[in-house]
Length: 75
Picture 1 (cartoon, rainbow, N blue to C red):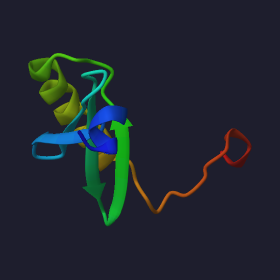
Picture 2: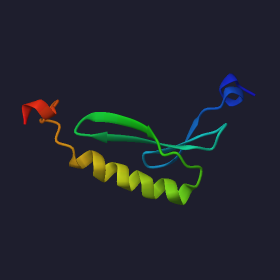
Picture 3: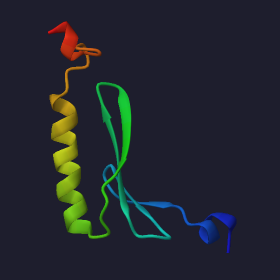
């Protein structure tokens, strides 16, 4: 058994979808506008992970990268 197998590692289970072997929790790895986002989907259910991945993609695509840091005081 390799060191990675003992410590747990990520295994690719779908497009932009990874599962942490030791806990079974799913993670997303999405690139939007050239920037990579990695987030836990906080579930160990694959069907729910796929739905959360789709929601995450739409949320990230909605954000305007040119807006920068907008504060309440600047409004």
